[in-house]
Image (cartoon, one colour):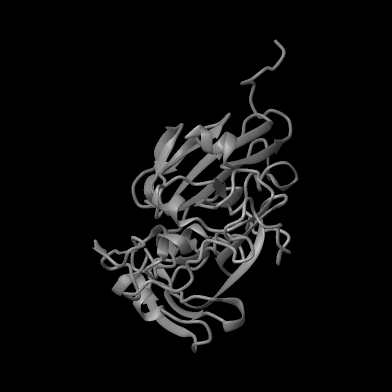
Length: 351
């Protein structure tokens, strides 16, 4: 790695689309610089920054390679981390994580990448871990606000579940602010059928406020350099996939969870409380026989994995980062509400 300036920005070989830090790294609000406390919470551009975990393309049902036209637009917007706490996110298509792209091994994708001037203040690009090519496409997709869209074409040559992310020199800042997502390349024979699929993305938010402190939180580079996040969240929000926004399932069903760890720094310890990953596709490997009955699995930053669960009994199943301070205090918890009669006699709350 080569240092790129006093702020500690680094260039990672093969992952960057440029060689200069971007001028988008202010961490203080000029209205409150030098004063105590946060500025007031800002007006939000969206009700929820969290992408619906069921927002997943349908499974592959074709048996020959296809061509796909995919357009991805970047958008910088203010949203709530939790009620009363606002933050300025950078996103692919306005939510976190970015949209899931789903294709078959051998398919050809033409990607159009847009950075509209009215929605952005910085240069962006896309590094696909599913792409053979310089920077995973990052070099060719590097676009400044208002530039003409960039376009690349690539073949999904190897199957698996892979992350994509912004990869300009300030990539850690951009990923932490929400710029990551997943691409699923199904094997030629497809994937086993399940009843439901969910899509979760974990990342860290480094801010100048404390957990739960109401007001507008600016990005804090010093906290990021120290790898001390304020929040660790699923789909951009603290506890945003619980209660009324929890995922849903029925007893007797099988679900598959795609789990992308954008990072930029922390390894997740993904665990379903009250259940087990009955089949776990470690590191997104869809070709090897899955591991069986895995309780907790490490997911490194920059990795997407997949795990399946059955629901023989009703009740809530909580998905957490089992580095438990992140789950209990910083936001890394989601719920699946399982309804219905027990499918098997396995559990009795009142014997």
